[in-house]
Every structure is written in structure tokens, then in C-alpha cells.
Length: 148
Figure 1 (tube, one colour):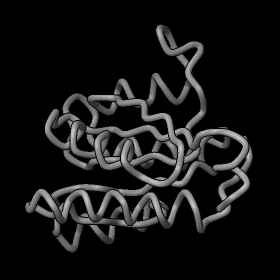
Figure 2: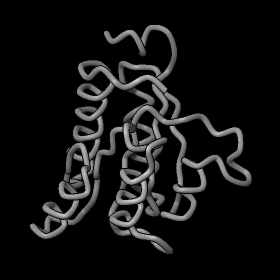
Figure 3: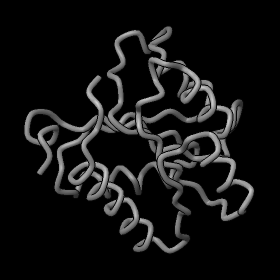
Figure 4: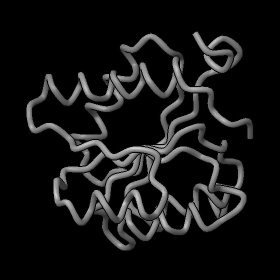
């Protein structure tokens, strides 16, 4: 188990506008092996306010990893990813794209914008939970995350 998991919970920011996907992600992470705190932003504007600790997010904890959907209201995930990776204070936070898009152009653009990985959400409920647990296994137990 990684040092982060032993000393403190992993901080996760889920940027997702679909309440069903939020619920499934929360359940999968709750039943996982690693202690974590899941915060949710429902659109790109809210996600950036959270990350920049603006307004009601002044006391927000810096996430260790961001799970980012591409298709979001107000500011889409591509714009959010670009802003995260352009800001020195945020660029080291790993960003996992977790989206329904299988479009080659979205995959290429996400990597061009320095996404750390791209995962297409399965439609099947059990497969979705399996994917979230795989993210947890890899990013929370295997990968060494950057310090804040």
C-alpha cells in the first residue's frame, strides 16, 4: 500500500454532471481497499472554483487525483483539463478522463492537453464499478502521487 493510503485518505475530485455516475463512483470507492474522500463538482466552472479554492471552496482540500468527464455543462472537460494543465499550481495533479466518449479526436485531444489517462465509461453497471475499482487500484495503491 502506498504511503499516502497509510497516513491519510486519498483526496479525489470527481467532475461529473450525471447523478447516476456520481452515485456509482461513490459506491465503488466506498467499498474499495483504500481510504478516500470524494468531492464532487457538477460542471467545469464549479471544478475550477474548487481547484482554485474560490468562494465557497476557500477551504477545499487539494485533490490527489481528478476524475474528469469531458461532456459537462457551462465549461466542458476539455477546457477544464486545459486550464488545469496550464496553471503551475494545479498541473501536477493527475487527471483521469472518465467519459462516455470513444471518439478518437477526444482521446487525442485529451492526451495533447496532458491528461494522465483516458478511460471510456462502460454502459454496463458491473463493468462501470469494475473500472472505478481499477482506477482506485492503480492510482491509489500503485502510483506515487505528487505531494501538495
